[in-house]
Picture (cartoon, rainbow, N blue to C red):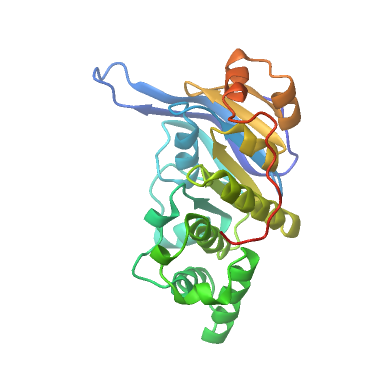
Length: 274
């Protein structure tokens, strides 16, 4: 595979994941031979239908799933396949953060939003109470939340607002890479547009890289410069997003494009925190 970025913040080679099958001699291969580079400030989409292996790739990158073979480097450091200690987990958190599809399941429902963000800041940075409060205010403003949102619980927010909280919590660690696993799939189209615009704004103001895991090529078109298409655990097509969407080389990619509800859909920019 040719080098795509001279100094990638993420470098993956030969990634493979096997799960036990009914016959131990024949494991189920969920990911096979996946490799890619992700440069600083770049946005790469990993696209495929359910079962394509894209989420398993994300989970291996985050250490939530142990890889069977292959190598992963983040910020120039190789990530071992064993379970890291507490100090190593904190260091890794400062390199890469994950935003889940359903933020309501990942947010502490017993904490107010301001406390959730304060906890995230405190875990990664040794700051005074006043400095943490200022950082929380900064994070909320960065994702388009209002000061009053700091005093409410996750259940009192809309789905789009909860996803903004999840993004702010991830940004609290000041990571080099943000992995977004179907991060807008549960939102309606208008709120998707707002969150995608927010992510574009974050990229414009930082050098954070995005790895966008999704099945929706309309989303890819809004955010990502490059696209990697997976099917059955392998990469079947990759290249600049504009080329993949306009002149797909694979029939499978063409079917994904045809599945977009409204071909050519482009979100309209909106700053409202819905």
